[in-house]
Image (cartoon, rainbow, N blue to C red):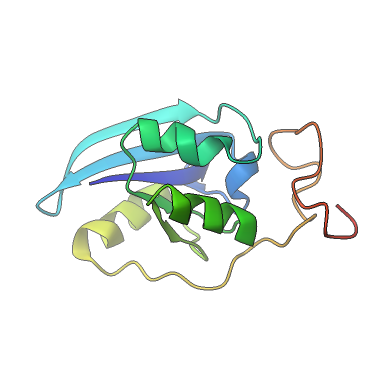
Amino acid sequence: MKIAISTEGDSVSAHFGRCPYFTIIEVENSKVIGKEVIDNPGHHPGFLPQFLNKKGVNTIVAGGMGQRAVDLFAEAKIGVVIGISGKIDQVVEKLQNGTLEGGESLCKPGLGKGYGLDKAGCDHPEEKDC
């Protein structure tokens, strides 16, 4: 199983699409057999689910993401766990132990402005303040 974690520094990023990096962990029989940190290639509607799917990712872990992104990951058959915060190593340990529990998204549409990667346009045209 491959898991991509939205990453900022050594912690989970609260804003999935604008995180600077993704930490991709490969887990087999509850053991980490691979770890790779890659640059976020950019925040474009629909792109990241396809990009991570091509990398073999089965699950995305993030502090938060919008409903549109959650739906796009579901279409790509990639599970989503949001509401996660803390150090990457602690999250990986919880993944290995099967104790990682998601919750409510830590970001809301429009709150990522000026954070992390810029984007050319609004991904949430139906939202005001976007």
